[in-house]
Image 1 (cartoon, rainbow, N blue to C red):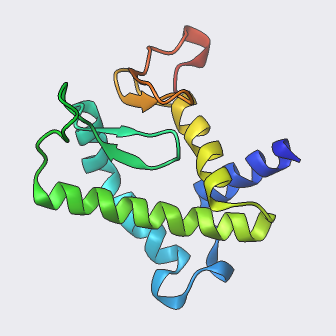
Image 2: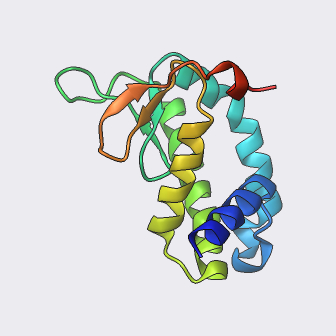
Image 3: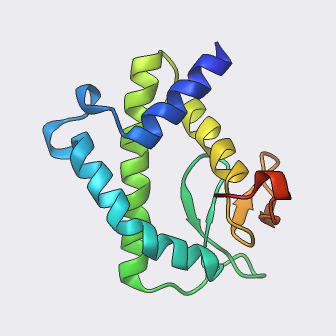
Length: 143
C-alpha cells in the first residue's frame, strides 16, 4: 500500500493531474503554471541558503543561529507562501484520491524531494535536523 501511495504521489505530483479534487479557482493547470513560473526563483533562494525543503513537504525560510528567520524580501516570502499553498492543494487532492492524509502525502513527497535535492540545498531530515544535501554518487547524478 505504501509503495502504491508513493508511486501515486510521484505520478500525480509530477504530472499535476489533480483536476477533479481542486476547485475551479485552484485548478491543476493554474497550479502547474504558477509552480513552473516560481521554480527558477525558488531554486535561486535554495541555492543561496535562504529557503530549504522541510520534512513535511513544504518550503521553509531558514533560521539563523539565534533561531530567527533569515532576512528575505517580502516578495520572496509571499512567493514561498504561494508555493506552499499550491503544494498543500496538490497534497490534499492526492490524499483525497488515495484515501490518505495531507500530512502523510507531504511527508512522502518530502522524502522524494530529499532524494533529488541539489547539492548544497538545505533539507530537513525526518529527525528534524537541517543539513545541506550531499553531492549525489556518480550513478545517482541527474541527467
